[in-house]
Length: 482
Ligand SMILES: [Zn+2]
Image: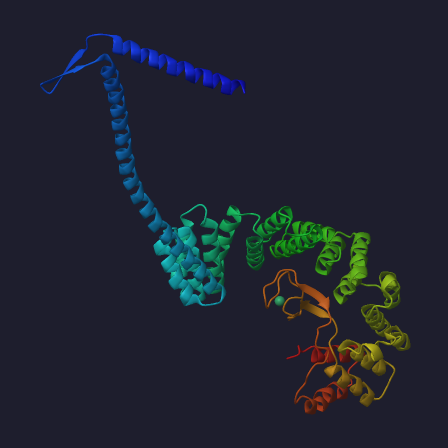
């Protein structure tokens, strides 16, 4: 309200001032003579004011016009960058389109298409770190090893893609069976990315294959540190490696160092049977029967195994059969129901020539788990009790086709091994051997039955002493199933 009033008053004042000014100028006499292009104009003071105002307006208009011209020029220039940008964007779009199509082709197993798309993407994108990987994988898929390797080598040049390149070449070398180069590359990849799980596994497997136990233990330690291996598994595998190390040292003739390594392996994993046996043998050679007994008892309680029993017998090599039975009874106290315990006690009773006790020791194994070993023991017992040859032969015939009971079997490929080893002989997997019953319980013997009277007849007719019958039958039954 007050503001409007002020504006009205200001307007009235301005009009009054202008009118007054104009009247004053009209009343002033004389004028100014202006000389434009040879012509003279005489302007009255009022005209003079108008002329000045017109000049100011003209200059202002001129300036505006110039700015417009500059703007137009800039606009034309700008239009050109916009056009080139448009084309660039188009190239990029085409490049990414080719890249994604290439990836799709790769995922759906169309190697050749993927390679064509990779070449197209490379042409448009000019980003080799993106397209090289696609090219390499597509080349690998189509079996073009040369292109794949060349492309992986290109990836080595850039820090960002070096690991991918190393890994790619490493996998190629592994596929070619060039394990030496593969191992060198695995070590390089491991140095670049120590936490990469696949690299750790490849390196560990190669180190184990090449008996580089020291290196393998380091890799295993890195696996534990990076969290890709649970602590208990690490401990167990470290024990396997320490044991393998101990075996190698023993082969070199360094018995004391080997003993220490075996004891270390046993400490890490008391249920690792070969480690317990080796450690116990170390203690036995030191004359430390107490420690040997302790180590073997612990291992036996974890997993009864004939090799543990054999090492346990070595603690007191020249004892009487009765003393041995007594000592073994303490070993097997906690595992009385285990088939291994039953068979072991039966064997000890047979060697003490107490055949009824041997039969009692076997218990219901003959009915429930008639393995080749159980049936052979039965043959020995019958022979010891003075049974007819035909009875003994009957048991041995059964033993031939009976399942063989637990063995060292690879958890990964089910390959059966005669003795324990850190890696599988068949698939090369590390620490997969377990003492267990093979999945196929029946041994197939096609066209073998007519041979039986010949084989068994020979064993029985020779009238061998009981233990030798057992041995011979075990050799016959011990042939691996084909
Ligand atoms: Zn295997």
